[in-house]
Image (cartoon, rainbow, N blue to C red; front, side, top):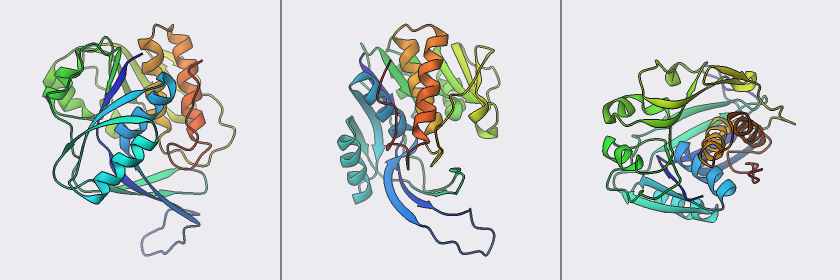
Length: 260
């Protein structure tokens, strides 16, 4: 399958801590690391593992963090197409003893823009971008999106094949306003729904870090539906992908590598 992602990338600094500090408290991290992450990077890397290749159309700053992000994503097997301008957005992520992540975003989100050469792709996953970029993405045979950019999705007015939203995150609630063939509503470890039918989350062997689990689930679900899997089979792959990520530190250490 020929897959692409349109979305943002952030340079994320991770710190594993016993708990998220309360007001005025100092905590000590026992591990720190940094990766280019954010929804665009995580979805693209998961699709690259499942499809053998994935292209990422993104925007990065004219700075060393932007260049470092592009190099690292290439090392992870993603073919990166960058529009440069401004400063690369950063984020801090605390990962506590339960594996829960708490994120502080620093700076403005850089969104990819049109024109994008996406005609002929089997799957495009729209994470973020301009209305024009989303219209270009509709040239793909299968177009998936997350509800995070709901105003852009509404303004562009293009039909979707899959929308991924949340049952428990107020910033990712879906109000039913879009023309979409499938709707997945995630509910973390409790599973969620696909087109109104309830599904169960795959059990995680251990939970080291939940960062990227939702985006990896969404990527795998889109991949499986786009290649023609039945919804139940697509959910089986997607829930495995979501659970796999939680075994490693950060989004990439333990992403699912098999598409079966």
